[in-house]
Length: 312
Image 1 (cartoon, helix red, strand yellow):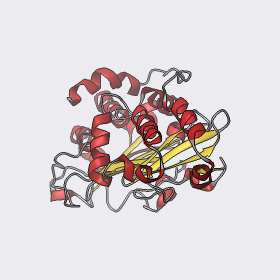
Image 2: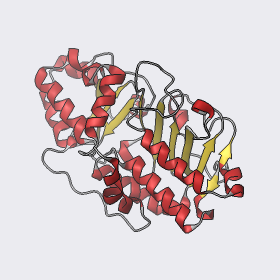
Image 3: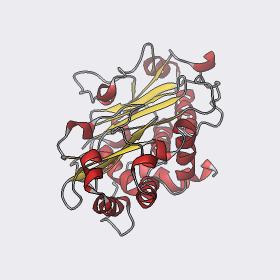
């Protein structure tokens, strides 16, 4: 897959024009497959992986965890495993999903070593959550009001056997996002770089605290995108497009709708961090986009970890 085609497909999604509401569910979408999976579960399976919709476990996000101890490949039938595989694939952009499956194989030995839980019941408020190493992802059919992706998510990748990747992060399927972000930094002038480049860490890494939203009174980190030139803002729009690239269009549209409602690209702040610079090459491995209703935190040291939370 060549990444050049991402501008054609997704730059429009990151522009400041309004984005239409997510379409109604169609047969074969992840949500309809979740309903089929739910109906196929035995009573024994339901007692192990099904919970009330308001169970606090539903909202948890982390970099490396199993929402239930039952692994997909050991607990579910082959037909159910196939449904879970299809649910997961359809949550992603068809042009990118092979890369996602590659990282799942390299990080966790494949999807069958991950875990799922179902909250509520299809036809009522419900959510399907899949977790494991470098993955928390959700499917909710818009049951979680005002939450893009159904709530906070996490993705990442360790490319190769060594935890500390080389400075070029060779073969990391998500490193292209950081490369695009660094294009923004290179386009900044001296004063802008001083505002955008910070010391320390952008936020604590402790489960849901990592995706906590901050208010204007708390202060946002880094350089306001509204203070950038038009060309620089267009580069930030491309960063946002690349961040959304791995995901299905339904979730991209919802995320953009919430971002647009708070000022679009101009409502964001962008920050880069001097610490954890792999190779000390000035290509910043740690950075984030943030606003009152969004955090997209990318940590590329020692390999890629990314936390996302976008709310209405």
